[in-house]
Image (cartoon, rainbow, N blue to C red; front, side, top):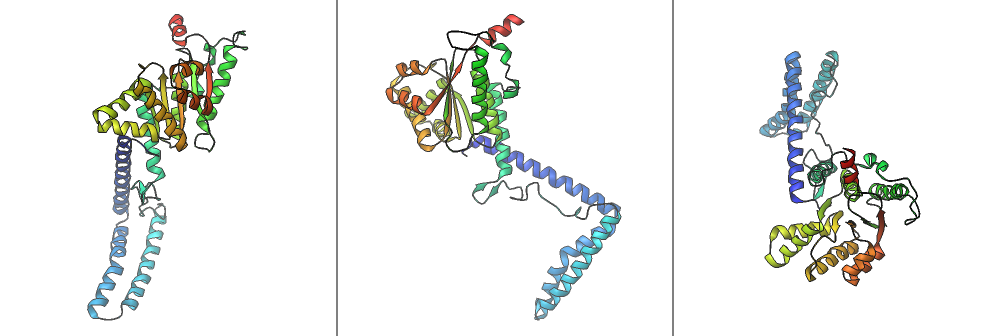
Length: 330
């Protein structure tokens, strides 16, 4: 799951701060217990020293440390029993003086060897949602808040149903895509329709769900994406290298507003590279556009059109511009 380095850094800082606060809270609780039951402080001091001192004494005397360690172990067990009794007598849990990290899998380090721990992965997902929120203005944009009342229930002979029926189907496709994300065999989505019909809204809803499932998500406009490809190719820009790498290797790429960019041979090549590399690697992509697939076939190369027609499900958006409807209501 190739998260952006800035996302990992911010998530790691959050993990470290959470672990620091957790440890500080434990230390405060422990000191309060010691103040109330001073004998517990002495027991913990003895427990931390007994076996070490027994081993050192045996080695200094040049004798077998086994008997000394056995006596120390018996003494430790007796001290532990006394500690449990004192804690329970004072209405504390038996493990109140035992520090437990927030994540016992990685001891709050965030990594298990070379593998990112699930605790850090969850924080990366949350940080990613935060960053996507600033780009997409996520707010309350989710599948639950997608308002079908903006779409007419009146039958439209041009589409063979009502806009609302079409959009109910569209909503279900996007919801299923997001919630089944990561399973083998999932197709890619091509969201097509006029401006103001909810393509960005449902893209944001997909991004939120997939991010919260712990996958890396990159959202960017077609104009910005192709600018980054250009910077990588002609300016030898290291940051652009990283951006293009993320576009091609993130778990989910959301390419917004395809068709808004100025066409050039570089755009044709970059779009094919992005789509084809992700298909070969089995990584899923969502593309939104005001163009239909037929219009895409006329605008881009046959190779791009072939990939989109063969490996993407076209998801139609119909209705009246929601922005205008909201403006008229106000």
